[in-house]
Amino acid sequence: MDLTRLAAFDSESDTLNVIIDTPKGNRNKFEYDEKRGLFRLGGVLPAGAVFPFDFGFVPSTRGGDGDPLDVLVLMDEPAFVGCLVPARLIGVIVAEQTERDGQTMRNDRLIAVADNARDQKDIVSLENLNNNLVDEIEHFFVSYNTVKGKAFKPEGRFGPEHARRIVEAGMRQETERETAN
Image (tube, rainbow, N blue to C red):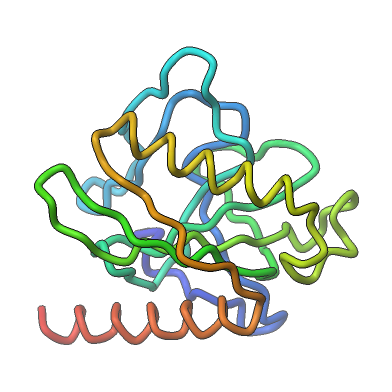
């Protein structure tokens, strides 16, 4: 089954479906290869740099960069590559990304909490997180992109309602892309 064909939201619980492609603490960045239906190594972070939380994508969506929407998931323990994690959106870091060729696009980072997390069970919005933690998450994405020769510019932090609107827009964009093909 093509993982990108799963629904973005679970029809029964309304939780966000997230497919983890890179577990917390990993230097290896994995990517889902839609054509082959498997995960492949997409890059390696420099020594000392690791993903601060599980990172993945929302199926049945497309973002400004042409890929499924990115989401960072706060959980008690790391998941594994390809794991489906039901999550609740707590916000988004709206950002602009400039590629090596100078092309600039939106490349927001959704932030979610695993629906059955114990340590983060009371977190419902980015406002519930320590500001230093959100600053560190932004810094991670800035430095991660710098290493790849790209620029990542955070433009704002918004709560779960704004994040949901971004997912819904990403769902529409994916539907339009499929209709055009």
